[in-house]
Image (cartoon, rainbow, N blue to C red):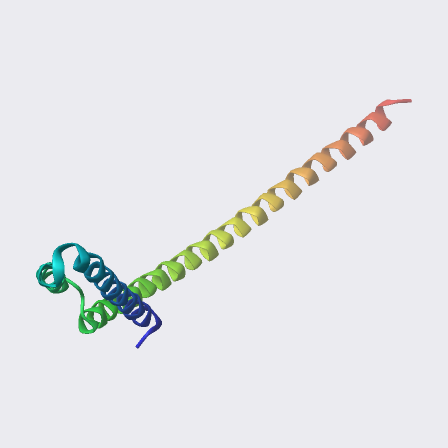
Amino acid sequence: MTGLLKGIVKILNTLYNKVMAKTLELYNALKDKIGEEGTRVVIEAFDEVVDKGHGNLATKEDLLKVESKLDSKIDKLDNKIDKVELTLRGEIEKSRAESKTEIEKAKSDLLRWMFIFWASQIGIIIALVKLLP
């Protein structure tokens, strides 16, 4: 049994023990007031109500089925998460490559314009030196 199932069984056993203890307390409390026969009738009615309600409780088999279904759904979700993660990683790498290309292009353009500016400055300086006597 898995930990979840063991925990549920433990809770159910605890509840059962508490119900039995309360039934005994109820029997002892009622016996003095309504007699042994009246108490027996009340306790039997109480047990009948508990037994009818017990039909709605999950069995170990029911819990195992639910656990199996949950495990299956968790596995499917894990697979979906893995697919989404791979897709996102691919998109991130693609964006990173595109950004790198754009940065390299911007650097190239900047260097070209800087060269044009320097060449113009040198030309202006040479022209000024020749014009001045």
